[in-house]
Image 1 (tube, rainbow, N blue to C red):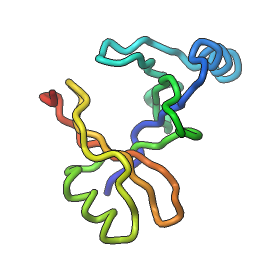
Image 2 (image 1 turned 135 degrees about the vertical axis):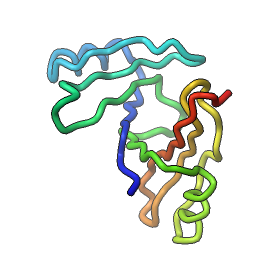
Image 3 (image 1 turned 90 degrees about the horizontal axis):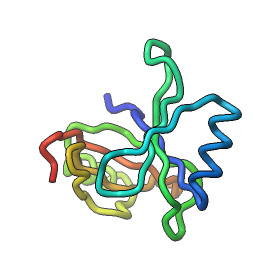
Image 4 (image 1 turned 30 degrees about the horizontal axis):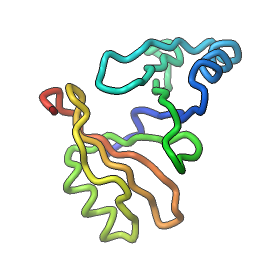
Length: 122
């Protein structure tokens, strides 16, 4: 059963937002060594329930946090999403060294991501 494995926080000012989450929740931020400006967020002890996330500069039109659900096959799940009344907003694309990702929405317009992990993605 696919589960939420990651969240993303869009920010107009990542430095300011990081300071907020560090001071309020004591979250830790680490610059990602990847092709885009992105920070990984550690939200707590991995032995306790919860997930970690990331932060990037807000893209035009992006609103609120986005949850990402890990799936075994992006192609299979984008088909399921469409056939059940959802939409695919950003088709599958690679995140080098991580996997393949797509942005979708449910029948109420709620945006979410799906990711197929694959360390050989280019």
